[in-house]
Length: 215
View 1 (cartoon, rainbow, N blue to C red):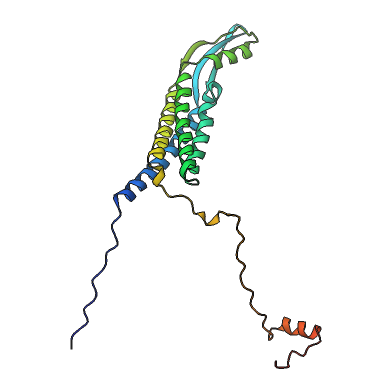
View 2: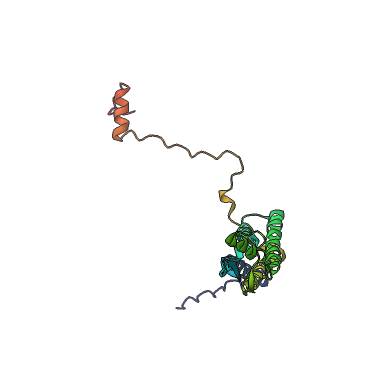
């Protein structure tokens, strides 16, 4: 009596190099885009410059946040984050356009942040408001490193956009089962009513039928 030989185990097919590359590029783009957007929003709320204004014979310390200097990094951070999410909701040409928008958001953030590194217009405006003199300017001007942090955030967004442009064609898209194509949906066939159910028996009595009579 011979024992049955178990069939050989079939191993799952190894993940292809393209699949591994796609997964890594997706993870990198999501990480870079999320961190870049968060850093840009954080940097926009921090002080970019400090100074003093002469008020009534004294000096008043003033500061300007990134939002006072320029609102571009914060706005583009939101645009870039929305574009990163939209990459997975569109296909083909739409994905390329959204990826390009993400890339431009990063480039615009870099440019706006670097232009704000030595900005003094925001503090001069605050000095004029505080002193009541439109010609007043800020003194003891100094700048922080937060504009460079905003520029670094732009670099992260830019890299996320370049990844999307390079590898985005192979990334998966959101399921299309929720997309309506305009065609009518097939109706489910209605089951015949059960004459033994109480409600059906009452309906038969209302029609003047004998529900106990066999058909």
